[in-house]
Image (cartoon, rainbow, N blue to C red; front, side):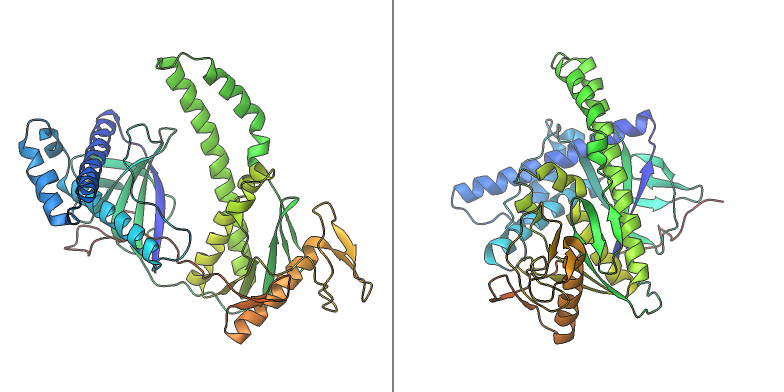
Length: 414
């Protein structure tokens, strides 16, 4: 399986300029190749092949006066940018034809130097891990890395990223074997919510930290200061960086919370079942800010790939399953309940239910049934059978085959 390891890097002034050139050259190659394909499509011409684009927009473009600066960066950066464009087109075509599951993808779009995220991708021919703990990137130099863990194997590709707050990161993609944990006899159903972030079927409640709500006061002040700056001024650029850094802190805290909670659940349970929520739909309601602050999709994605990594069972219960309407004790199906109803009494057996705990236990029972039956069908609130949504694969970055021995596993250095 492929795993991604992210580390913070601290380039010096000359390295930041070299990275800025690399970001710009990769963006120009992407836009030039995309423009050629769009113009060919508009003119009714055949799809322009990658080999032709590589010859025109990379090899020959370096010999022209207006694109001579493409030779200042590694050729691997330019070739990988073209490969990323090919991957974007393939995903779009597969989505249109129905070969790609999930939300329908749109065609590739032009990139801008004002995008909040700039990145380049390299294979093993353009980077290597040094003995002194740095990472050498072709035509950039040795980047100082803040190592937090060892790499389990030699990386197959490297992505250098600059975020909106001006921070630089390197992301290694590593092919490694699953780390199977000892087997357990416990399984758990999870009900995600807003009043409590998650309620487990054993009664455990994980409180909602609400990182965005807690930082809202400071964010409002920084946004007011930004709005008062003159557009295009240096003070406005400084104020924008302050806002971006505050948002980055919120995102980092949320991600760290998700990692801790998901790791604990995977370690304590042999099987994990969770409800497949319509986050994109809930994000358009009056609860949008709270829904996005909770970050359910990121948390479920972590549960999914960590279950695959550690040999645990993971299943999603369809969002149409009436987990909040069914009594877990007797199976009696009650009517719909508004959100303010947090407790209800079963009209059949008289059991008093906590809404979230009852839903978590129903998710547990339904998840067990799905796994035992070996099929992805469940009943919705109307009693009709619906097919459970397919579990998407963990998003990974495909690297080029390793050639030579220019990289090594672990943290280099003394």
